[in-house]
Amino acid sequence: MTGTISDVQAPQSNKTAYDGLRDVVAGGVSSNMRARGVAAPLVVDSAAGARIRDVEGNELIDANMGYGPHIFGYADRDVTEHVAARFRCGHLTGLPHRLDHEAAELVAELVPGVEQLRFANSGTEALMSAVRLARALTGRTLVLTFGGHYHGWSETLLRTRECDGYRPRPLAPGMIPEAMAHTLQVGWNDAAAVEAVFEEHGGELAAVLCEPVLANAGVVAPAPGFLELLRERTRSSGALLVFDEVITGFRVSRGGAQELYGVVPDLTVLSKVMGGGFPVAAFGGPRQAMKPLAQLEAFHAGVYAGNHAAMAAVAASLAKVRSLPGLYTELEALGAYAEARVHEAAAAAQRTLQVRRVGSVMSVALTSPATGAVDPDGHRRLQIACQGRGVYFHPIPDEPWFLSTAHTRSDIDTIADVLAESLAEVC
Ligand SMILES: CC1=C(O)/C(=C\N=C2/C=C(C(=O)O)C[C@@H](O)[C@@H]2O)C(COP(=O)(O)O)=CN1
Ligand SMILES: Cc1ncc(COP(=O)(O)O)c(C=O)c1O
Image (cartoon, rainbow, N blue to C red; front, side, top):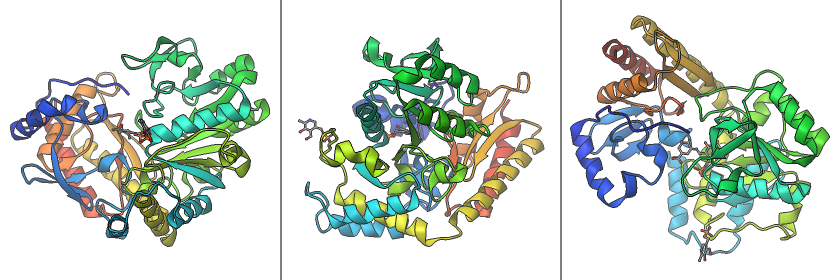
């Protein structure tokens, strides 16, 4: 995850609001990702459906949608009412609840690779635990990851895209130098590199971990046969295949990427859509894989893990997913319409946008006319221009757009018109 604050100026009124924030919240945000790319991120006041309202009362159509959890739009009543009711009757007791059962059964019903699971508070937590479980199951420590794939900010998974050989480097100041001692990394869709790693390290690998559709460096679908290659090599070497479906889970299909591509991993990590915007994650797999936790021999904990409000959010979100047989057909059609309209907007402005999409998750990036490569500074200027015209997407082109059932075709037309106007203005 790269990106530095550029010199692109945010609207002054918003900047004033942000400067006040920054006085008491380090960096003005509680996640670095929110402050990347512009001098001051938009300061929001509220959100509903496909729209956010900023501190000045401006309403914007949102294509970032909180980075993906809100597949039914912000403040979806079917989810929020359910959670609100739970808050009114005690949402955190530290005891098991029938809602845990209801939520877990829905995940197991919808996700092909999950028979049993544990809930957690965040994707980072769930990934830490899934990787630790893979190490416990195999007695091995080495994990193979892929460049650009984001698996949260834990000590052994937060890493650079660039490698020394197959070794990524710790990404953040303060990380221990040995943090990557048990982590290898190759390029996404690089079958030859995967074969080479298995040739050299196959017997040492505890797991191969990937976003089955890369969605944190723009959207990059798996090459035909690539997931099958990972499945076959892990199975034959005794390593576990771990799918980080934090973004793709319940997003690209009802059963996530594993259902869409027909490749079932040994462990699956889920979050975002699963909780409909409430902080909850899960990791799971076949009962055999979860046995060390079922027998309380392996360790996983968390005061807030599986709290009753989060379970209510999962139960409501997934019951709604299950109840809508045409949901993913509708989202695919909306995504295809959006992709076509974005290309039309670029053509109208005689500019080129790199558009890559799987279902309702789509990356849109301004490219340089000279090189054809993504132009991060130009993209930031485009983002600020669109924001000023009532359309929000993230200023960093790595961050994809997330569409929802709350986005109408008229919203997509407005986004396309604003893009065309803004592209004409941005040099
Ligand atoms: C594929 C994937 C993710 O996309 C992911 C989190 N994604 C994001 C985190 C953001 C943030 O911390 O503000 C915003 C986005 O950069 C990104 O979607 C995580 C970590 O989840 P969490 O942020 O809940 O700890 C794991 N796997
Ligand atoms: C002192 C202390 N630190 C950290 C933790 C871990 O917090 P969490 O369970 O939210 O991960 C706990 C949880 O009980 C705790 O008591």
